[in-house]
Image (cartoon, rainbow, N blue to C red; front, side, top):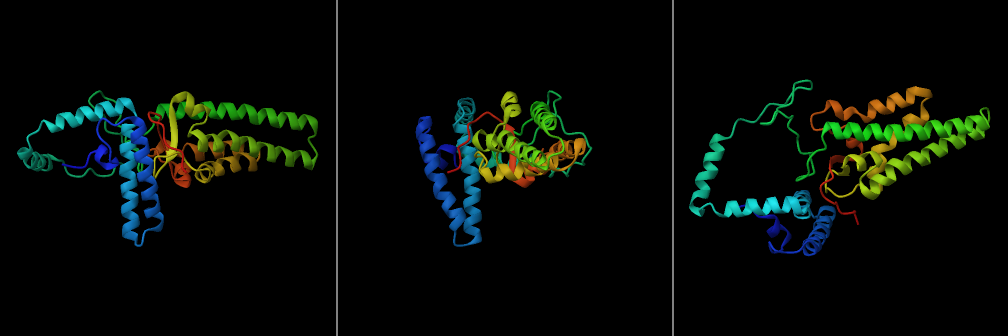
Length: 277
């Protein structure tokens, strides 16, 4: 039988959330040191794999609903006679279908029994559910409208004051850069959510650990669209930034160019990730 989440964290099944959080942090710090200072590539890779499993366990056990469902699954599994385990595993392997081929870019996604498109778990964040297309588009619309209004307001104000001054242009660029970073970068590093993501209950997390992104990763995630909006003239910058930002729409796993640069993933906000130390 595989190791349970409780065994992985070294706590009892009736442990409180505080006890689980303490055990999780202690184990995470230990693995982080091994991943960074391991004596060999094999040791470092093993620590990273263990970290992914640890985060998956924390994401389940920190959420009351997921923990209850997980405990129920453990109770059901414990009712299976031990001498039948091997037979069940053999039957499952025999019944398992061949590995599915990679789906084409425009091929329809497989659907579940209710006819809804199946979602894929974001790569690198075990236990978390990828944010659905509808929520991400709604969050994007809220963020674009909010910062679009700010962009137009700041630009109109400075143009009305002085449209020919080089100093006004420099002030405009600096002001917009600060505002965009404050809205996108710092809020993502602090809580994983911009206003749009908060209203649609999704969030951005680190692809490796499931924790909140560091300031560096949040900056890498948003730096290109911010520079495009500010650096390119007129609507050209806005269009280029928007196309860059919605590249995930055409990708099955919803990992767009921004997530690849920042090494982040967008998931449903059903758990509270830890802030990186």
